[in-house]
Amino acid sequence: MKKTSRRKMMVTGISAAAGVSALGVAARLAQKYGLVPPDHGGLYGPGETLTYASMRLLTRHSMAREFSRSQISQRPLENELAPFSDEFKRHQTTKFVDWRLVVDGMVARPTSFSVNQLKSYPPHSQITEVVCEEGWSYIAEWNGVPLSYILDLVGAHPQAKYVFYFSIEPDWWESMDMADAMHPQTFLTYGMNGDELPVGNGGPIRMRLPRQLGYKSVKFLNRLIVTDDVKKFGKGLGSVSPEEGYAWFAGI
Amino acid sequence: MSTMESAHVPLEATAAAMRDVTRTQPRHSLLVRVTHWIVTLAFFALLLTGAEIIVSHPRFYWGETGNILTEPLFKIPIPASRKLVPTGYGYVMPDQNGWSRALHFQSAWLLVLMGLLYVIGGVVTGHLRRDLLPSGADLSWRRIVDVMTHHLRIAPRSEDPWSYNVLQRLTYLFVVFILFPVVIWTGLALSPAFDSAVPATVSLLGGRQSARTLHFFVSIALVLFLFIHVVMVWREGFKSRMRAMVTGQAPNRKECR
Image (cartoon, rainbow over the protein chains, first blue to last red):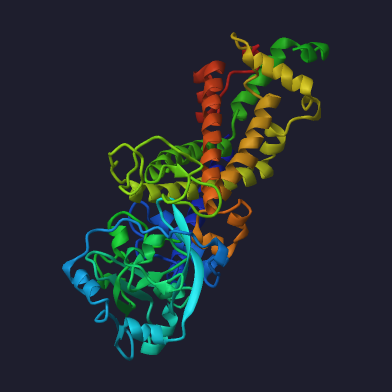
């Protein structure tokens, strides 16, 4: 009996030590390869980290499903919005001619783009599904310019790790890692189903990340900041979502 | 008992041997007990948070897309936690989606990892083959109907606490190898990132909204299993079955006859 229990104890001890050191090595590797999300702390940090790390390994270059024109939803849902700010209403009355998208941070040439300027670049479109965390969804054609095109234009530094993006409306900002920022389906959209992007769907400019839930596709964009430091923004969790209890990485 | 008598083994000696077996070998191995309770914990968390997430949109659809502008397959008659959903109640529930989603996915990870540990451990230790795979002789309709009629009797026949009957084996196999994999599959199909890597995950189910509806139905099936499972445990002796799943100890075979 004694012999077995001593052996058992040794085996348990060795496995525990191996387990702990394996976890340590895994954590260091994950940090090195950018597999740790900004909201990795707290009670639900382990789940968020496991999800982000596995999806980063699995989906670095994968493409969101695209649909046929016949699958486009007949009425794209305009989900509920807070009342617009006076600043936004002013832009609405002037049909967004003075709207600017400012891009700065870790870039060689900080630039401010008008909506028409964005429209002058080679147009791209994708027919993808908007997927809300609540459960509903719709399919639309999104017209715009890939974010990677704009990042090349302004000369984003190679050391940059994240792109933060802000709505003109208060407390509405998100960020994405460079894998998503350089992804060919990540768009700055200005059109929907071949028309102007309606205000209810985020016009004049909306971010589109079809591989993540709808709340990452921030509406009424007016600012992008390229950075390598999430700590500078809000509580340092990567976006306003984790501050409200939602995941920073919404690819699930 | 008849097999023991025909083998002419003195009864006392058999009982002593059985007691020895009980001492050295638990009814349920440590692997089974640990994974059972961690999966139970994760399942309850998934159930609670899953129900919470439904409150934000208590409508279900079929096909790829679905929203308040499209016809639902069915609705759950509860108020929603979003103003935009027309429920007819004129009341908006508090929004609890943030922590619910975080706990849902963390519990899903725990359940998947424990499930893998259980299945791999079950193959290595022979638990699946020994305890869950029904014997050829048991796999007859006569035997299954026999067990069913025993179950339907008002006064239950005491079952051997050291082994599962054929109905139990088939049910556990169905839950472990059909219901849980399908609930994980339909859940993964709701991940836009995973779908981008493996589009068949969602397309084989007939679209995103079909996947969501199926995820709901399979969860209901799991809840139904849980309910029957607990009723059976209670009928067979709640205390002794709980002790067996917590400490591994069970009454000797002799005592239960």
